[in-house]
Length: 74
Image (cartoon, rainbow, N blue to C red; front, side, top):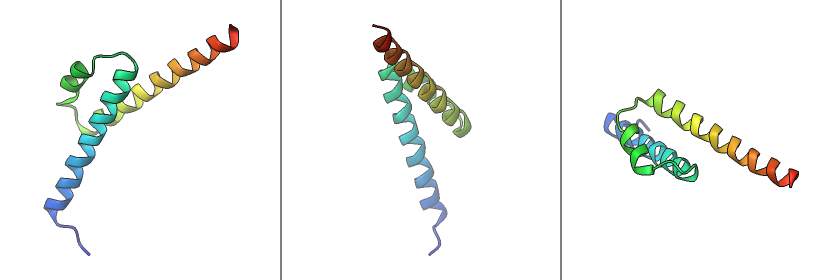
């Protein structure tokens, strides 16, 4: 079954929105203002959104690792 161009565009838009939501969730976990984050990511390209998502995931992982190290040291 072939997917029409409209269905392709709908899937792309949906994927972009999910990626934006994921970025905002991670930003809020890192105590970054989600409203500000949402405003900043509105104009990003697909590749920039992916890069921002990876960057924030890395920051979240570093924060979690630091928390675990603090627990081990205490």
